[in-house]
Length: 146
Image (cartoon, rainbow, N blue to C red):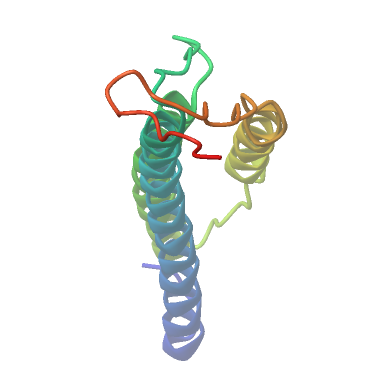
């Protein structure tokens, strides 16, 4: 145990816990956004089918479902990273040799920025909804009486 006063150690541990909880909230947000993006993409595709009666072409690699899955996986990875970092800092505080490490912050910043940039084309490059044909093959056509 270190020679640091007990109240200072307590404050450092509480700060470490708050940092862990902030990472945990970020992870939950990433998982939630991933789920929402994946489901909203599915909803938009089904809405397009309902409006146009045609199945839209979907890129097998670059879709909102895949981006959503990646966000969920990054959120899970962030939870694991947060728990590892919390434990590492806990023992550094106990030994009295805390050394800040910015690498996890830069890694998460880079990953989230990359995922953000990957979501831009999904927002901009939507298939245009073609106008609904005036008559559908399964419905009787109305007659114009003059």
